[in-house]
Amino acid sequence: MFVSLTLASIVVLLCVLFNRVSNHFGIPMLAAFILLGMLFGSDGIFKIDFENYVFAEQICSFALIFIMFYGGFGTKWTTARPVAVKAVLLSTAGVALTAGLTALFCRFVLGFTMLHSILMGSVISSTDAASVFSILRSKKLNLKDGTASLLEVESGSNDPMSYMLTAISLSLLRGDVSAPSMLGMVFAQIAFGVLFGIAVAFAARHVFQNFQFSTSGFDAAFLAAVAVLAYALPSLVGGNGYLSAYIAGIILGNSHLPEKRTLVHFFDGVTGLMQMAIFFLLGLVSSPSLLPGVLLPAIGIALFLTLVARPAAVFALLSPFGCSKGQMLLTSWSGLRGAASIVFAISAAMSGVQLDVFHIVFCVVLLSILIQGTLIPAVSRRLDMIDENADVLTTFTDYTDEVDLQFVKLKIGKSHPWKDQNLKDVSLPPELLIVLILRAGERIVPDGATELHENDVLVLCAPAFQEDTVIRLAELTVKPDSEWVGQRISAIHDDLGSLVIMIQRDGQTIIPNGRTTLRQNDVLVLNQT
Image (cartoon, rainbow, N blue to C red; front, side, top):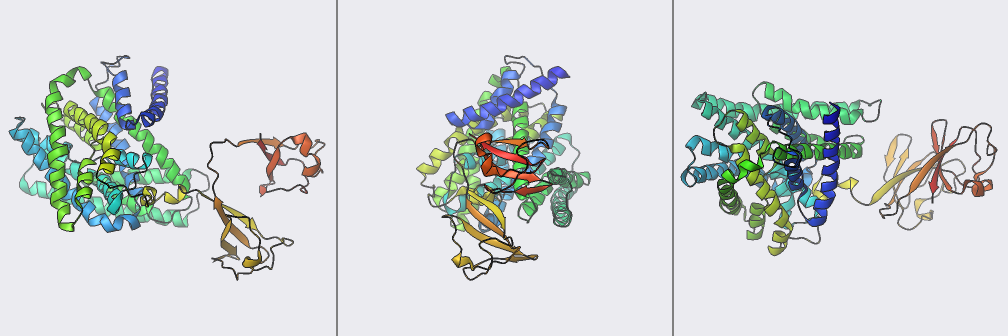
C-alpha cells in the first residue's frame, strides 16, 4: 500500500510540474498527462503492467461526473443565452450527425462491420469540455460573435448525447435491444436526466440559501455530494446521469450561493485532479506497442472527423442562423476529443468488443489534443476571430472572482471622523470606492448625498494587489508576562521590526494604528520584510 501511495503522490506532483512545462512550450496540458501515463505504463520506463479496465472505467466515470458538473457550474447563463439554441443543436443533432458520418466512413472506407462502425462513431462523437475550457482560459482567447460561449455550452453539454449513443450501440452489439426498447431507452435517458437534474439542483439551492454550515469547507463537501447524487439518482432508473449532473451544475452555478468564491476554488482543484486522473489512466492503460497496428485507421478517423464530419455537422446546423464563415470554421476546428471519449472507449473495451476501440480512440484523442488544441490560437487569429475588446473570463460564472478587485469592510464608530457626513464630503484615497452600506439589516447602495451614521458598516472596493512580490505574514502572541502588555504599538515599533497589520483579540479582528494598546494574549499578524 505504501508503494502505491508513494507512486500516486509522485504522479500528481509530476502532473502539476508538467502543467507548468506544457504551458511554457505551448503544449496542451492534457496531452502531457497522457504522455506521463505512457511513461509509467507497461511499455514505458517504469513498466507498470496495468490493464484493469474495470477499475479504470470506475475511476474515469467518477471523475467525469465532476467534470460534467463543473462544466455546467462554470457556464454563465446570461452570456450563454444568446447562443443556447445553436449550442444545444450542436450538442444533440450535431453529435448524432458526426457519429453517423464517422460510422459511414468506418464502414465503407476502413472496412469495419456496421455495428463496430456505429460504436466507433458514437464513442468519438462528442467534444471535450475540459480541453476547450483550459485553452480558452490559459490563452485568454476572446472570440467574436459569442463563439467562446457557444463552444463552452456545446462542449459541456454534448457528452450525454454521446453516452446515450454509445449505450445504444453496445446494446445493438449484444443483440438485446429492439426498436420499442430503444425508444424507451432514449426517452428515459433524456426525461429522467432532465427531471432529476432540475430537482436535485433546486433542493440543493434551497439548502444553501436557508442552512448555515457550521464548519468551513462543509459547503464544498455538500456540493460535491450533490454532484454525485445528481448523477446517481437518474442512473438508478435508466436516466442519463451525465445530463443530470450538467443541468444541476448550470442551475447552481447561476444561483446566488453563499461563499461562492470558495466553492469555485474547490471545484477548480477537484476538476483539475479529475482531469489528471482520466488522462493519466488513459496513458497508463494503453500499450504503445499496440499503437502501430491501429495507427492508420486512427489517423484516418481523426482526419475525417476534423476535416469532414465535424465541419459538415457545424455548417449544416449553423448556416441557417446566418453565422459567419469564420465562426463556423473555428467552431469546426475547436471540436477537440477527450475525457468522455476515453471513458466510453473503456466501457466498450470492457464489453468484449473485438475491435480495439480503446487504442484507436487513444490515438484519435492524442492527435486531436496535440494538433487541434495547439493550433486553436493560431487558427483563431488566421480567421480573424479574436475580439480585442472582449474578455473571455466573463463567460464563466466565477468571473467576479478573477477580476482585480478586493472588497473590505469598515464600521463607523462613535468617534469616527466620517460620522454624520455626506458621502460626497468624505475624502477617500484614489481608486477606492464605497459600494454598499449595511445599516440595521438594510442594504443601501450609496450616492453622494448619502449620510453616514454611527454603526454603519461600509463595504469598500479597490484594485487588488497582483504583483509577483510575495507578502510574508507571521503571527506573534503577546504573553501575559510580556513587557509589551499595556504598551502602544508606536512605542514598541522598533522592537517588533515589522508592521502590525491585524490583531486577533477575544474572537474579534482589530485593524490597529499607532495608538492601539496591546493586551495579554493578543495575536499579532505581522508583515515581515
